Image (cartoon, rainbow over the protein chains, first blue to last red):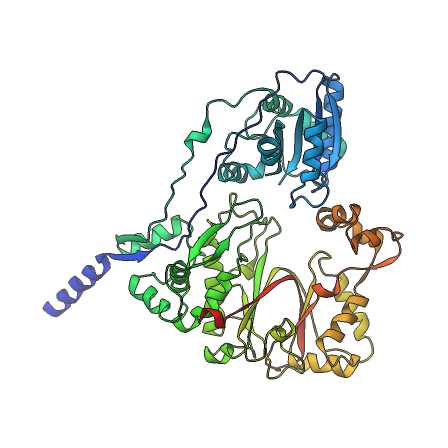
Amino acid sequence: MANEAQANQKTDVEENKKITVMNPVGYPPKITPKPMAPRLESLDGKTLYLVDPRFDDSGLFLRQVQDWFADHMPSVTTKFVEMSSVYTKDDPKTWEMIKANGDGAIIGVGH
Amino acid sequence: MHAITIDSKYGVPTVAIHTNVFEKVVQSVTQLHGMPQARYTFVPQPVMGKTAEQLRAYVDGKSPISGRPVMQEVIEGLTRPAEGDRVKELKYERSTPRLVGADTDENLDRLFLENNWTDKLPIVFPTEKRVAEMLGHTSRKPDEVVGHMRSNQFRLHWEYTVERVAVNAVMAGARPEYFPVILALASSGVSARGSTTSSMAAMVVVNGPIRHEITMNAGTGAMAPYNHANATIGRAYGLLSQNLQGGSLPGDSYMGSQGNGYAYGTVTFAENEERSPWTPFHVQHGFKPSDSTVSIFTGCRSTAFTLGVREKYWREHVRNMLRGMDAHSAPTFLLDPIAARQYIDRGGFDTKEKLIQWVYDNALMPAGEYWDYQLIQNYIYPRATFGEEPYASKLKAAPDEMIKMFKPDEIHVVVVGGETNGYWRIMGCNYQKTVSVDEWR
């Protein structure tokens, strides 16, 4: 009986024994805050680009956004533009064009 | 991500519209890119396949996240300054501690599970002693940077050292002698836990002398859970991917809609070079036969399989298999040595390259069907419309004209299996790269 009690006690000690282990997580990147562009005072008379990332029928969706502006805010000019390639790639040429000719942008449907 | 670029880099106020299932992803990505105040709103999932009328209802409706009208949030996002300065809330000095604990086994188990540091199966605790043993099997220093990884192209890369890779190798149950293979996989920067909604998994093919040194399996059951090295190297690759890239959490940093069972252990095996009638895979990619390498493929969603290469209709059978594959993920033929030799007998393909050329010439589909696939619409059609070849030329084909589904350099052949029969399969996956194991010894 004594031996059995000792064995049980030993098991309890082992179960409660604390160990230190190593962290499996990598090192996160340093985050650099980015400024937001100044917002527009009003959309009246402004030109908005509707940017189609060409993903999962996003173009058809943006056409509905375009129709909404025509119905509810006709003073806003909307221009539909497709990204130059797949949505996974940056598209500086299109962004430059929007900057030169537009006042704001709506992109969707994002992924 | 593009909205952040247009807004912050080009100075054009921008609002992004997402589907509601991406709420956490959007919050996470905008934080990671230093613009938590970015303007966005949500519409219901899915957009794909909805009619114009249904999508107009989304536009006229309310955000399923905020309950506010979608277009009101769009207009406010373009016209109202950000409330407060959420940038200041960002934490810039995040350090990952080296140690965890001390605590009991039970509590550590719970901690690792709660932190999503495991694949939900039991792990080996990475004690300092076990990690030190792992580190003893590379000449590289523990604090040397191995590489950078991220779960998708919209996230920032995380960084990791030899020691951090070793921690994950221990957790997977790998033996220290496998460590150079695991380091080579980590150095690739290719994640086995990509966040794509398409539910990817990775496949690893090991070539060269290391296969025998660590007793990997290239024969019977090579792709199944019957070999310690195959199993734990693949598992280590998955664990290190999720932990070293900053996580793989459903709804946040993992968006695979259905998930992928291949991701449990990653499909990891050695090529059966000894029984193959052809050049080993790594030699095809510029290495010497005496080099040890790992080759990484991603995708592994679609498979087709059959038995043997029949004398009369083998061409039709293979064409049927190819047409049944996902048209966006190229075919990698995984051939038992019996099937490989049958391909030589039937088609005269005395090199892998000749078989690849035949597959390229015979993986055909009517252009109308090809371009209508949603994956082709998402990933190939945009490139075609802006002149990228060979897609631009394919786009000129009439709807009923047969066009090639793949490019020849996307098609691959690997020999694996134990010749218990001539079964073989096609894995739909994209070859990423081949990495030297020897450099990590």
